[in-house]
Image (cartoon, rainbow, N blue to C red; front, side, top):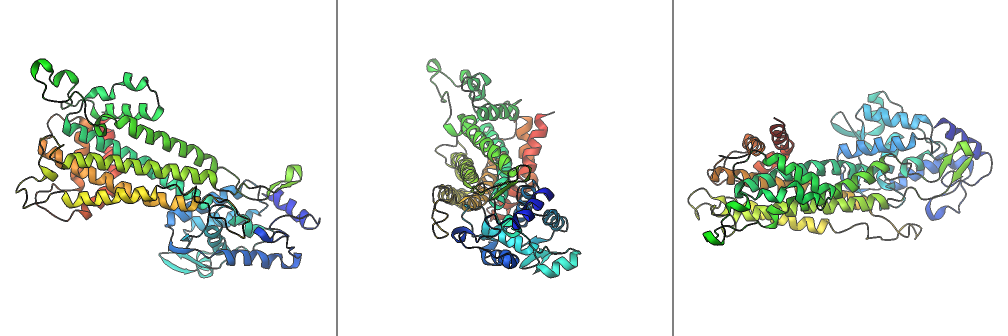
Length: 480
C-alpha cells in the first residue's frame, strides 16, 4: 500500500493523466481537476454519490462490505494510504457502522452509491449506528476515540469503486442458503418417513450412474438421515400383480427425486461459492496501480457482472428449495395425496377445525413472490451515467432480491418442518430413524403440537430461528 501511495504522489507531479486523480469521473473524465482543488473534488464525489434510498441495509451487510473493501484496498493496487484501511478496521472493531440505504447502485462501476455512504462516514460525515443508536458520524468518531480520514489523492474514488456491497450481500446470503438447504434435506427426510418411501431412490449405485456432485452428496446425506428407519419400504414390499398390487412401486417426484432436485441446488450453490470466493479476494478498482512496474492501468475491474450472475444463480437456487418444499407440504395436506392422513392434518373435529389450511396459503403466496424475485436482474441493464455506463450488471439489485428470497425460503422450509412434525405425530414416531426422530424432537422443542387451532405465525418464526438447531440435532444423531 505504501509503495502504491508513493507511486501516486510521484504521478501528481508528472503531468500524467490518471482517472479520478486529476480528471473528473464518469463522462466527466475529459475535465481536468487542478491540483489545488483535488481534495474538494474527492469530498464532492462522496457527497454527490451518497444519495441512496430506502431502508438501511442490515448492520452485518454493512460490516461485511467494509471488510471486503478494506481487504481489496489492502492489496496495494488502489494507491490509498494505509491509514484508510486502518480506519475502516478500527470502525469495525468499535462496531461503528455507517447507515447505508439499500437502494442506489447499478453494479457497473461497482456499488458507488452504497460505498459512498461508507466512505463519507469514514471522513466524519453522514450518519452511523454506534452504541445502539443512530448519530452523526463525527460525534461517534469522537466517542470511539477515532479520527476521521481526510481523503488525499484518489482515496474517495478508491473507497467508492468496486463490488464490495453486492458481494457482501451475496456472500452472507450464500451462507444462509447453504444452511437452509441442509434444513430442506432434513424436512424431505421427515416427509419420506411419513410416507414410508422407497430406499431404492437413494441407492448409491443410482447416483453414481449420473454422478453430479451435488446429487451424490444429497443422496448420501439422505441415506445418513434415513439410516436405521423401519418405516421405509422397498419395491418388493409394495405388492405385485400376483397379489393385487395395493401400492405404487415408486413415489412422486417430491419424494423420489430429492437427490436430483436438491442436488442441483447444491451444484448451483457450489458455483456461486466459487465465484464469490474469487471476488472476495479480488482487486475491484479502476485504475489499477502496479508500482513494481511503474504502471497505472485503466480498465474495468469494478464491473459487477460476475457477482450479478452469481446472485441470480443464488436466487434460482433459493426459489427452487422453497418450491420443492411447498410441493411436499401440499402432498401432506391434501387428503387425495397424503396416504390416508386427515385433510390439513386436522387431528379431530374436521370442518370445525381447519388445521394447517391457513398456513398453506402463506407458503403458496411466498413461493409465488419468489418466482417474481428470481427473475434475472443481471439481464435488466439500464444504461446510465450519460451513457458512459452503457451496460450494467444490476448485481446490487440481484443481491438485494436474494436476501429477500432467503428470508422467504427459510419460512417455507419452516412451514414444511412444522407440517412434517404434525404428520409424524399422526402416524406415530415408531420406526423413525435416529436422525429423523431427533429432528422431530428438536421441532417439538420449538413448536407445540397443534391440538387446537391457533395462529401459527409466531411458531413459524421460532422455527425459522431454530432451523440450524433442527439440522444439528439430526446431524448429531447420524454420527452416533
